[in-house]
Structure formats: structure tokens, C-alpha cells
Image (cartoon, helix red, strand yellow):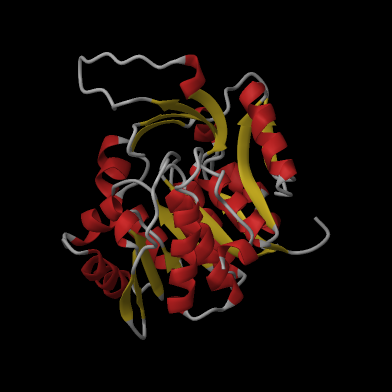
Length: 313
């Protein structure tokens, strides 16, 4: 890229296999999915967030890997269609790209199973080779969900050495990330959080790290514990909860009739990062991010409702 990127993303870029069912099955249950209720959609937490940022008007790039399979071709085409830079996305022969199974019920509730596949090969050497690329952006956005955290800490340190701000999305509960998946130690997770300027954990991740029951208390506790300048927690129909060095507040959600909640958190994160990069007041940023999330729940698919800045306003 000849011009500096606004945001480089390090995380999951995948294809979502979405199944619409009349109910999400319990253990040992069977349900039927008609052919018309199954579809393939562009997805992955980081792919979604970068797409949201691109549609809002920022220049974005993806740092990661895809396989040389059909899903890899779909991922590359999607990024090219959205003008997401792939100059440092490695295509690995003979490997499967990341994919996701998503089951959505009639009320828009969902369950998600993640398959990182080739993304497990993103290691410290790969990040080291991309150090100049990391230094070429205005903000580095890192996702914690499916991949080892240690290479991402290296990326964050590279960005920090160049005074580039860092956003970090802990997208699964901390206990899952550390104990069940073994993707980081608690020391590594806490180091990553302390390096970031904008911490945007899922509600489960925030609860694990604070033992608080209310999202606003979680945001304040995270701010105080890790000395992070900004914490924002999205909580679906309740809106979001934000803590900064100056204030802590709740920004209510917009009232909508949801169709599919898939990607709504990623759309919210795109809105929060967009406002942060633009230097907006955090209350304005939170309201804007809530609107991004709401728009994305009224259409099927993780990215279908992502809009331009004017449309969000």
C-alpha cells in the first residue's frame, strides 16, 4: 500500500456456515434444516470488524493466513471487494482456511462453533516478518479468541514501540481462552490487556477478569486493574458500558426487531474503533457503535447490515 493504513487487524478471517432452525437443539435432539435455510457468508471476528471499518470509510489491512481452498478464495475475494489490504496475508498450500458453524433460531439467538484451521500457524516468526507492516498503520486491532496470544503480544509491542495505539477484543471468556483452549497464560493475557489503549472484551471475558456482576462495574474494574485508558463492553439489547479516565457511563441500545445477532458485536467494535480513530468524544462514539451493532442484527449474516458512516447516522 502506498498510503498509510488506518487500521491493521490481527485475528480471525473466516467463512460462516449459517443454519437457520426453528429451535437450537439440546443434547441428543434432532432438528431438520431445509436446504434454503443453509448459507455461506463472509465472517470471522476480525474479518467482520475490518469490513465494518472499511464500509465506514477507513483504510484497513488484514494480517493473517488463509488456505488455498475454496473458502480461502471466498475470503480473498471478500477482502478485495471491501478494499481490505491483503499484502501481508499468507496463502498456505494444502491447508484449510478458517470456518465457523452458526446455528440461528427463530428469535435470532445463536450458537457458534469456531474452526481456526490454518490460523493456528500464525506464530512469532510470522509476526516478526510483518513488523514494518504493523508500523504502517494508525491503530493495530488485535482479537483474542482462536489463536495463540504470544505472537499477538509481540505485534502489540511492535506497535507500542512506534507509538501506535492498540485495540484488543477478548472475544471469549478468559477461562475458556486460558484453561480450556490453552491459548495463553493469565500473565500473557494480562500483559496484552495492559498494552492496549482500547479494551473491548465480551461480557464473559469481562466477568471472568473482574468477578463483577454488572457490566458498568466490570468496565470500571478493568480500567482500574489494568490501567487501560478506555474500556467498552457491548451487552446486546442493554447497549454498552464504557469507562474512561474521566467518566463511566451506560449507552442504551436502539430498539429493533432482531433477525440474526451474528456479527453484531463485531459491527459494534467497528463503530467504537472508528470513533476512537476519529478522536470523537466517547459518549458520541458509544452511541454510534450501538447504531452499528443494531443495524447488523436486522439482516441475516455477519456483515449484511454493516453500513457507511452516513447511513449509520
